[in-house]
Image (cartoon, rainbow, N blue to C red):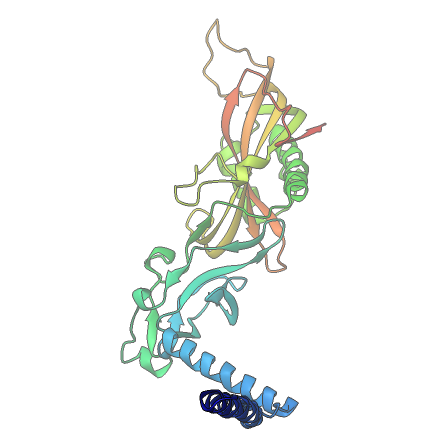
Length: 342
């Protein structure tokens, strides 16, 4: 081997040694770094502690978003009606005799709601607390910080006045049974002018018979019910529009000057009846070509039954109003109708 070959071989051997040494050193370095970056596992107690801390931080942030908490005075109203805070039921319900107090945060939303027999849960829409409140007067400040205004939900006497036009979960069978049971009794009492035949002897119902149906002191007509009809759709009134007063099934709360009741909760049920109606009105003005005394005809009569919620949380009939008459049959063949033959 000549001199140049020996030098080349020596150079190659030295280079290979450095490469191998570099790889070996690299392997050792990686192993050392792996040992340094490995973190010890958290214990179960540490995990629970960290989770609680994170939840607390989240709750504090949410609390700040809700604003400051104040006590709010609310209007007088029926005891079944509660305040809901951000969709959750509070322990605060209305009182018919005095203002109640509820604690709310200034950026919360609130609504009013509660549960009633046969119509289930009823709710108003939601309102902003801050936009519907005002500072308490000096006299009021002894009891609460602010007054929850609810301008669209109270009357001038600061009593809750709400109409629940859309009944979300009605007991259709229960509603129709209530009306179908009470209407024949009422019409029998009207036919004979005998108030003892009424479904109950409340001053409201007896007064309704005497002052509206048989206001002249005797029976104006005799009724024989053939069929009764209840329309399920009568409970589905547009929440954004006015309830069609006499032609719907709905719930109201508030003062009723006609019944002379304050904080009354009323259920109005719309029903129809196919009746054989006999003219017994002794005071009617008659003509030669008009209906004769004692003559009969078959009619479809539309009624609205007015019920009051009593102290035992039951619906008690308070009045019946005839709101329409037709000589023509109704199509009650669709599934929205409940029909009872008498």
